[in-house]
Image 1: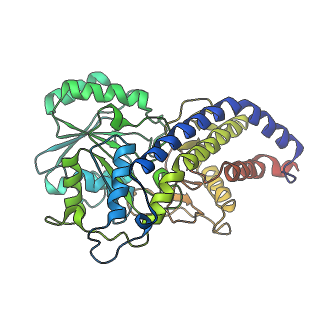
Image 2 (image 1 turned 90 degrees about the vertical axis):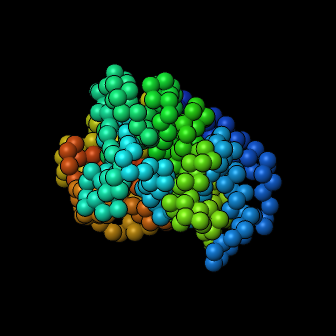
Image 3 (image 1 turned 60 degrees about the horizontal axis):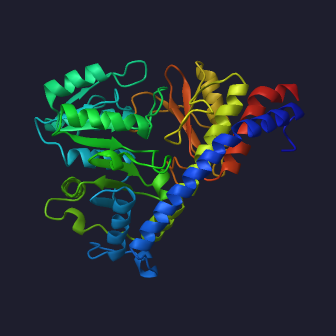
Length: 417
């Protein structure tokens, strides 16, 4: 851009050439996933009337029911629950877990300690009110070993405990570890089935939808959940979540979401069906654009000497790019510059503060059209070592490229102009 110094423009050109092969891979993923979604829409014979919503109880909502069949087809599962009554990704996960766990039964996280908001759902952080532990559910986890699964420890724990549910968290959360690709999740699923065959395998799929060609449910996961204001909503959905998996597990989730005797039969879609259908349809492309933006960001920031994870040429399985500063002030400055390059509330200055579901203060740059939408370009992080911002999203690659280059200009070139 004209306001970038010549040296920075040269670096941008270098980065563009450097990452071109990676972006081509993303284009291939987008094409594959777009075809998968299109085929599901055609198979289920989506019509204009399906885009209309319902009110009140929402009984006999044919558009909502057809959308759930589309989700089940795309994710290769028996059933699906796609509802606006899920208020967030955390709520969606909580309902799926609570619907399938009972007092004295055990939940085991295979992928280390879960992220902050899920710790409160479980009851190992916060006031424990309404948590799984408060209802008598047991909890255990397998600590990671050098950022990866400790298979020996996992086998020992699963053999001894035989937990009701074994959870796999695909994304890193607020952890600088690598997110787990489908190639890494497949052997996890195989090991669980071998060692604890009666366990329900649960996938926290937040940020993961359409980032690869295949999903964990294609390789034996029993139930999987995510948010509609992340990948699957395509930046259009304004609220909601989805759960896909075995029919019985979905029915249990629905009973927890609403009430016994009601389950999935009620829940008005209001004006959301149009957003959900269109958002899902464009989701492969939006997800691909966001991943391209994170690849570009990783490469550019690394040239500036900033510690990043993953690196620009590493395999990606979600929208998250970790930027590690080891310095609180630099972390906060970065968040403020991200906010300043947002389409909404660019004039607002993020201030570290306590937010619901988090133990530490969090700084959030979220100048997004939908509050909390992390398929839109945003970044946040807890104020604790290693003082990292977890960037994610981007409705268009062009926006992310402009925004992150402006940030780099402010942080590394402004004083030299």
